[in-house]
Image 1 (cartoon, rainbow, N blue to C red):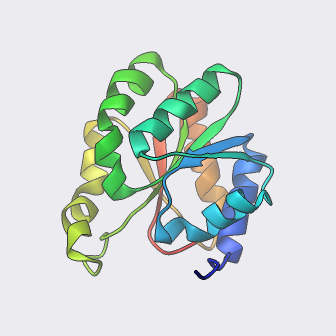
Image 2: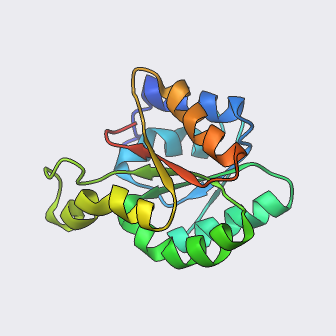
Image 3: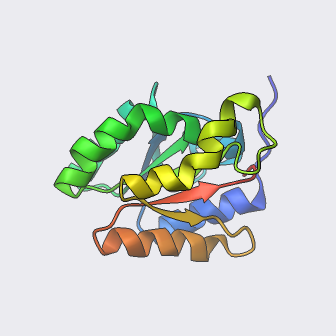
Length: 167
């Protein structure tokens, strides 16, 4: 088994999350987020990490962490967003507990595996339907992208950082 390459962008995203007060992470691994997960699993980032078996479980864990005073981030692949739509709409949106979401945007350009085509094409519309603001990661300025999501969250509005290329 090979060790994922940790990119400078992954390190910058994690540093920006820490700068915004994120201190707890959970999620379901995705190849586009492999570098971020590698850093979290190695304990390099200043963020406690608890792996989750499913995306809906990850959101529930993050809500619990938020209620315990932590500032959580949930990392997931966009195909996993379907698993957690109910918990996002019936728990986080209703009660105003919005964890920081980092979602890999598989199929955004129509050149991914066929199973990512529909969700990739419709991801932004799906987020709009449930009231989650999409912020696409600017790899040249990852800190600015993380800050944009944090600003939504601080204003009480849910938001997700969308990652289109591997970190």
